[in-house]
Structure formats: structure tokens, C-alpha cells
Image (cartoon, rainbow, N blue to C red):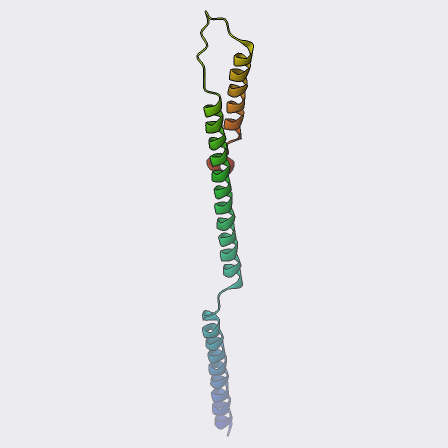
Length: 120
């Protein structure tokens, strides 16, 4: 009779272990097709960062294009006149040339370079 009770307890124990392992397997199999929330949020963060970076790069390109166009317009309106040391200069021409150089250097300083601003 004791042997029958031990055999019954052993069979019940093995069935409980099998049920536990089967439940664990089914949970793992069910979670296999669901993406981790950490991985999904990390992927979304990377995608958002790439989108922001491309928007910033595009904005920098537009700003640089506008500055280049304005510099070309200024170059067409006020072409460089060669200043020779021996000649007497007229005040308005000298003022225009100096203003043009100052404006040109200021606009060149305003140009943004993506490599310098995001080289972290």
C-alpha cells in the first residue's frame, strides 16, 4: 500500500513538473512574437533622432544656400574695384568696398557647418 502511495505521489510530482514546463514554454513562445518594450522604445528614439538630424541638416543647407545667393547678389551689385595705392580714392567707393568686405566676412561667419555643430 505504501508503494502504491509513493508511486501515486511520484506520478503527481512528474505531472506537476510537466505542467510547469509546458506553461513556461507556452509563455516564452507567446512572448517570442511580441517585441520588447525596451527595444521598441529604443528603436523609436533612434528613428526620431535620425529624423531630427536630417531636418537640422536640411535647414542648414537651406540657410547656406540663402547666404550664398545673397553674397552673389551683393557681388553683382557691387563688383570689386582694384584699389591701387598711388591713386586717389573717392570716399563713397572706399566706403562701399569696405562695407562689402565686412558684410561678406560676416555672412561667411554665419554659415553653419554640420560637422562643427554636431561633432560630439
